[in-house]
Amino acid sequence: MLMELILIVMFIYAIAILLLSIIALKGPTIGDQVLAIDVLTYISLVLFTLLSIYLKQPLLIVLVIPLALWVYSLDIYIAKYLEHGDLGA
Amino acid sequence: MSGETGIYILMAVVSLISTLAVYMAVVEKDLVKAVIYSALQSGLYTILYFLLLAPDIGLVYIPVAVGLIPGVLLILISKTERWEKE
Amino acid sequence: MISVLETPIILRVIGSALLCLGAFAALVSAIGFHRFKNFYLRLHAATIGSIWGSVYPLVGSAILAITVEELGVYRWFVAGASIVAAFIVLILAPAGSHALARGVHKAKVARVKPCIADKLDPELCG
Image 1: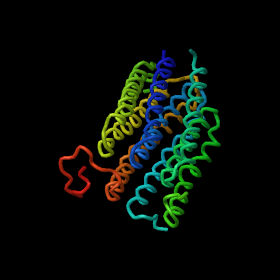
Image 2: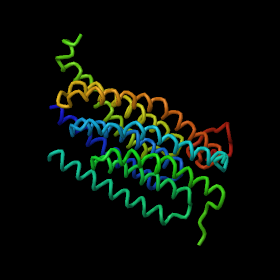
Image 3: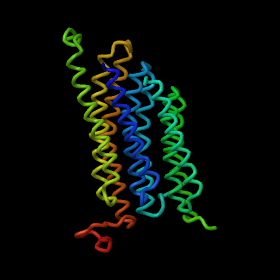
Image 4: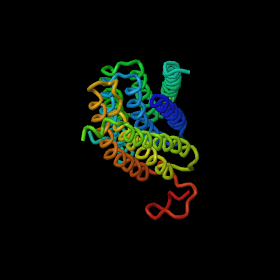
């Protein structure tokens, strides 16, 4: 019962990742491409946690925390480049 | 359909989308958009490394490909040119 | 206290409810990115996808992982890492999208297409 529910929720998250990556490939401006990559990464964190419970391998959860931290820096690079023209180096 | 088949189908779909992202990064003339396509490809590769049950390779791949390479490339673009000529 | 946790029904119901809410919110956010017309409206869809689609399901899967007995003693590690990741996403995601919106508006990259008034910079009003 629990494992079937986790399988259905993972399938819905995979469809959401697919729909968001279409915007990241073709979006009209740079801003919504970066926004789609941001949301795509935060959604794939839930996919990783559910897969770690489903496959009974608890050491796979270690990938989740650095991914959440480093994708924030991509936002800041693009924001600093668009606002000032250079990255202040 | 069991869970194993679903994981193989997800691996195939993510590989196809990352190949398309790499092709668009090579053809693109605006270099900032090429950096963003490269970051998208790196994000999809970490999903692949996770599905292949290798968390330590993904843990090393993330700071290099998502955190440092776009930063260094954007400093380089701000000091030279942004639009690639013929 | 531990004898209450031996019946996992209540914890499983709470965890499953939070996971179903997160799945619905992720699907709505992904469809909303296609339907909105300019960049500044897509920030609403990004907030739904980040907070309702990623913070609440991580807390829900932390509660759910405590009841899965096949993981052994490591189920507490899975729950702890999930709660730490939920807290990190709660702090970092709104700050990142706010900085991105400020950068895009200052550089005049995205126009406000169905526009009534833009008082900060009136030439961006499409």
